[in-house]
Length: 255
Image (cartoon, rainbow, N blue to C red):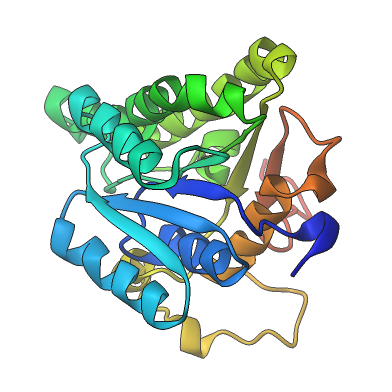
């Protein structure tokens, strides 16, 4: 796709790209002519994605990176610049979660989820900042509907994702003068391998004929990411786009 909705020629870093939403975004960008740097905590997992992208005619560099490790993140940025000379787009997709009641979440469990989701976004964005500013770049953060409305048994995850929404708004104002647009996507349930293992719903089982849908596809999130990275979203700054299907509206209040 060329023109206003195109990302052809861009260099994009996509974190957490070994599967699910991150992989879909990386593959979409590569299909559309972007050069992508993809990372995950396991080199072997992200190598497979890079191989698939290259076999399809795209350009991809796979890097092992734990986004909670600042030195690893800085090495990721350096590898991107060394390979492709610039960074036009950063997609902060790396995340993790587990379900537990608030009373049962240990300090280590809480810190782990906040570190990966929120602190990891901080590390990657700050490390890539100077290059994004040089190239009038875009930052696309991944939050969640759990970060907007809360979600039972996901207090640690929801709190971290809420922080990402606020960071998006704040940073978009700070970096606007540097020519960087910062936006965010808040997906609802998406049929990723992680969701399938928890809920037993696979992407193959989802009916796309009906608007009244309760679970999304990774490609539908990639559509939004491509829009936010493209010139078509030039007037969209500091926004969080919710992609959660038909909202759950209470017909009668519980008294």
